[in-house]
Every structure is written in C-alpha cells, then in structure tokens.
Length: 371
View (cartoon, rainbow, N blue to C red):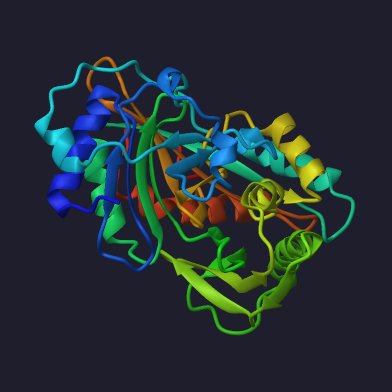
C-alpha cells in the first residue's frame, strides 16, 4: 500500500479526476492517514475476472459494486498500480470519460410524497419495509476534491472516500455503515446492523417504527450469516451519530470458514438500504424511484490478501464536470418506509442525512432541498 502526505494525495486526486484516470483515495473510520493509488491500465489489457479476486488469497484492490447490480457481483476494481508521487511526476494523456452521468433533476416533494403513499399501500405487515431514496441535483464552481476534503474533516468517524472509474464516474462520501470486515485466514467477520433514525441526543427508548425497522435488519444479517454455517454473536444496542442525527446499531461478529464472494453477494443490499423482504423491496424501488441510484446503496472497500473491509456507499455524491466548467452534483438520501411512515417525516429524515454534505456545496437557485 502507498501512503502519502495529505496535500500530495489530494493534488493527485485532482489530477486524476481532471484526466479521467481511475483512482481512489480513502481513510478508515477514526484514522487520520489517507491511502491513495491510481490504476491507469485499461481494463481491456487486464487478464483476470474480478469476482474471483474477492477470494483469491493474494489479490489486492479497491472494489466498487453498484446498487443496481442487486445480488450479482460485478464490481469495478481499482488496483494499486501507481502512487500519488508517480501521478504528480508523470505526464498522462486524458483518458475516456465516464459512461454514466448524474441526473439533471431533483426529486420533487410531489413525486416523493406519491412514492411514499404507494409504498405504504403495498406493504403487507408492520415488519415489512422499503427504503425509498430521493436525489438532490446541484451545480457549483468549486473543484469537488476540495469539497470532499472539507466534508472528510467533519466526519472523521466515517469511512471517507473519493474515487473515479469510467464505469462509475466520480464519487465521494463519508459513510457510517460497515458492510463487512472479513479476515478469511482467521475465519472472522464483523459487521453492523444500522437502521432507525432520530435527532441526536434524544432521550428515552426508540419508538416502535424505528425499533421494528432496525430489528428487521439485524434479523436479516444474522439469518444470512447462520445460513453460511457461521457462529454468530450480537452485541447490545447502541447509537451511532452522524451530523445532527443518530442511528440504532448492533455490532455483529461471525466465526468459521468464510467465502467472501458468497457472503457479500447475500448480504448486499441489506434491508438498511433496500428493505425487507429484499426481493419485494427491490421491485418497489425499481418501480417507483425516478432516478438511478448507480453507486448509492452499493458497496465499496479494500481487499488486501485475506483481509477485506467493505462499506455501504451512503452519504455520498455523484459528480460530473459540465461543458461550462461547473460541476453537477447528485446527492442521495433515503429512509426505511413502513406502514406507519408519513411523507413529510420521511422527507425531513432524508434531508437530515444529506445536510452535512449539502452544507459543503454551494447550492444553485434551482436546488430542491426544502419544502
């Protein structure tokens, strides 16, 4: 792995994003040091399949899997080919741009309300839920790497990341949600059940709606892990903060023989970003949401030999440079919809999740963020 000085890695990220060179810059929760590497070798010149890399004992790379892939793993992979120093010292030709693009529209309150009303009518029991997201479209003049740096500084307890590949485009974010920390050599897996949202510092017990939503996620994860013949341990409820909100959380550990590809394909997408039952929730999302999630709600992370740490792509932005030199941002936020959900409450919950990132970007006058 290649660790570099802070200024150097962010300057290298700027250069790569300007020239469409695949790269990643990230920092693990609670760590101050950032890791950067770039991968300018075209995929057509690589001689391996990506999925087997997840279980190959000596493979190394940063993996990016989209939400739209569902349970089919076909991630983009950035390999640690060159360092930040090498990027800054080398002249590169500009590479082809991204094959996907951000939306030029925000989710309107009218559309969002209609989606929530429809979903609540489709859910058959109080334990069922569907995660409906909305998208905010913004434009700004500032380089997104600068915006990402400020955002990262304010969220040190999250997994912070910025990456570009041609298949995914440019993304950055700070996610509080671990999908899986896996060590196949030790036979250990650690994950979290993270669901339910309320204002940070709220006293008293969690309400029934949030508790049911959280318990569904916990039950789903435990069922998957036990289905792989793993011994599962669940820690007591705790709270995880992000900005002005907090989430209900259980830390979950599992032990035994671990097949990374099989477990990740079963765990993702979790009910925390999709819903429960997963198959029905995924169908409702495809039917109702007016935007593509792309990488939002998918998973990302680093594999080094037997050790992998994957996170859910949340609290993130999809960015593209426009012909006039400005940048278009798509910021995503959502919440778990149950039979008890109210449109305005859910709108405000999604807003609270997006607000730390929105506050770092200068909104255009056309932004739809409030109602």
